[in-house]
Amino acid sequence: MYTILRKDNVAPNVDRYVIAAPDVAAKAQPGQFVVLRLHEQGERIPISISDWNRDAGTITLIVQVVGHTTQQMAAMEIGDSILDLLGPLGKPAVIEPMGTIACVAGGVATAIIYPEARQHRKVGNRVLTLVGVRNQDHLFYQEELAAISDRVLVATDDGSYGHKGFVTDLLQQVIDDGIHLDQVIAIGPIPMMQAVAELTKRYEIKTVVSLNPIMMDGTGMCGACRVRVGDEIKFCCTDGPEFDGHLVDFTSLLRRSRLYERLEYEASLPVKEREGKGCDGRCHE
Ligand SMILES: Cc1cc2nc3c(=O)[nH]c(=O)nc-3n(C[C@H](O)[C@H](O)[C@H](O)COP(=O)(O)OP(=O)(O)OC[C@H]3O[C@@H](n4cnc5c(N)ncnc54)[C@H](O)[C@@H]3O)c2cc1C
Ligand code: FES
Image (cartoon, rainbow, N blue to C red):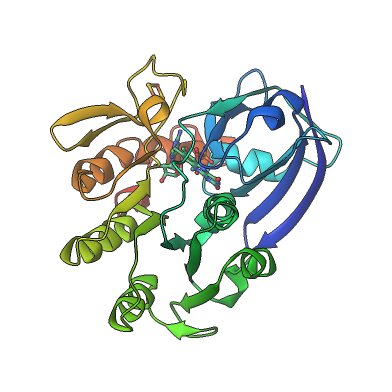
């Protein structure tokens, strides 16, 4: 059992959990994730390890409520326990001295990019962090990112903070300013990562993306997380989650990630509404 020691809300529908998980904390590295199951009947969901404290034996997860399991998790309180928590899983991000790195995050992925940006800074890279969110209420980790970045740029869809527009506008601006980028890391929704990869391809800037396909076991057994990367089929959980953004087939990734939309929608309904009602069409919008 993995006890929730701290919980706070960092943005609308986004909570931070500090969880006692000494075995995971002892080995966690940037880019890795856990697969957790809240209770005996629960489904397994993958969540990135956003931070860890090896001495205290804790890990930090940032979780956005999007469906059935994340709703159940949001209802848990300090002192409650998670039944299973498997990790650290996935290959750690490759972080070595490279020069100037742009860390590009969309929405809740700010939580995932943070430990990577921090490690890049630690090994001596110049770190430009670019964050895109819906509006300023959805910004979090700003102080943490400022402390480990040479520059933080923010874009909001509605212009309530920073640049009004997409995070790709910020990246274009950095490139137009003549800043040489040795690598771009993009983490966020699939369309955002695809847009970043298309932009950087034009300038031949090496780009790494962290993929978030449907996962089940998280250990390479079920094949649910398969993604096409160049001419190869890769398992995101064991070969990734990070891949060369210029080789990822984002179209099939997006299609596969929508396979269970109907079931996910039904699962998120209260039990009474779920019975015999099924999808009202919203899940196909
Ligand atoms: C490697 C990895 C790291 C992730 N890290 C984080 C994180 O740090 N914070 C965070 O909030 N979310 C993260 N996610 C996404 C998170 O796993 C899903 O939001 C969660 O599984 C949704 O479960 P649900 O039952 O609440 O929603 P559902 O109703 O099951 O689904 C709602 C949405 O989530 C997507 N989804 C559902 N199941 C999965 C799954 N097993 N894997 C991926 N996407 C899924 C669906 O396509 C759908 O768009 C990560 C996903 C992956 C693959
Ligand atoms: S989640 Fe099963 S193979 Fe990756």
